[in-house]
Amino acid sequence: MDRIRRALDLARSQRENSADAADVDRGTQPFAPERPAAIATLVAPTSIVYHHTRVFTPAAGVLEANRVVSPGSTDPAASAFRMLRTQVLQRMDAKGWRSLAIFSPGPEDGKTTTAINLAVSLANDRRHTVLLVDFDFRHPTLAGRFGLAPEFGGDDALLGAARVEDCLYHAEGFERLVLLPARSTMTNSSEILAGPRSREIVSELRGRYPERIVVFDLPPVLNADDALAFAPLVECGLVVASEGRTRRNDLVRTIELLHKTSLVGTVLNQASDTPGGY
Ligand SMILES: Nc1ncnc2c1ncn2[C@@H]1O[C@H](COP(=O)(O)OP(=O)(O)OP(=O)(O)O)[C@@H](O)[C@H]1O
Ligand SMILES: [Mg+2]
Image (cartoon, rainbow, N blue to C red; front, top):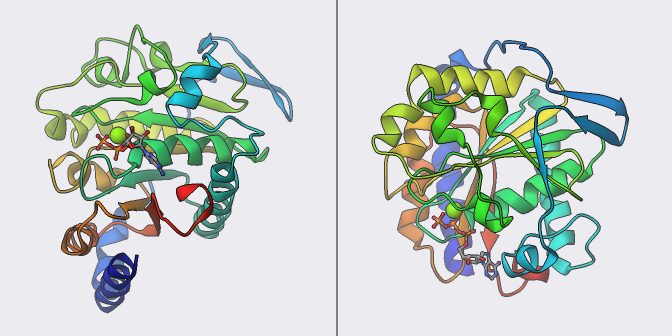
């Protein structure tokens, strides 16, 4: 634990020293969002009718086995994610940010687990709807975590083989949360993620509803260039580190590489001294 905390302190002081330069580089954000036709209608503060988004019923056993914390759960992890949600929301609200990417140095640090449970918790806050996007085309796992086999995914949308609205899924029981899963891996994913269609889709997803928060799950920062290629398209990021797995130098390197991205925080996953392991 101390090892990771020392690495975070070091990375934080390095970022503070380079903050002025990074502020200049951030001059292009945020996006001027487009406002295409609505696909869901807000009929009451807590009830959304999905016209185009496909609705499916995830099995409770599948969710539990995949560490998806259902809304209203009394699991200690739920309270850990509520605390994370509050901190993330405060920082995003203060800047008017609505798009958040989940980063980590290496594989299996807990990015997808964090992305899902943070998204569920954000959607539990009735002021927001949440779109959770799997843009990890190296190891797409979001759909499987909900027991979903999507007909179309973000890969199809990025390649022009499907419309974005054909790739949206709503898991029953997860109010105000919509998933945009990946259907399969994609070659040249970093080029595609940095390309014009990706920019257009992110802008569309970000701008469709003012109260919507978009969370992107991505591949590890140090194993492929996808996450760094995509980082300029989001307004902010959250870094996940895994106690026992993440090496100090890798965490520092990751935060250095993300110096142009505004980070709203760092999550220590699988921590031994916190409730629920977060
Ligand atoms: N706090 C935790 N306690 C126990 N197991 C966990 C915890 N967080 C994640 N896991 C498990 O560790 C594995 C990897 O987690 P996850 O898929 O979230 O990582 P990832 O960073 O998205 O991995 P990848 O880089 O492969 O996409 C999963 O099986 C997940 O269920
Ligand atoms: Mg993952």
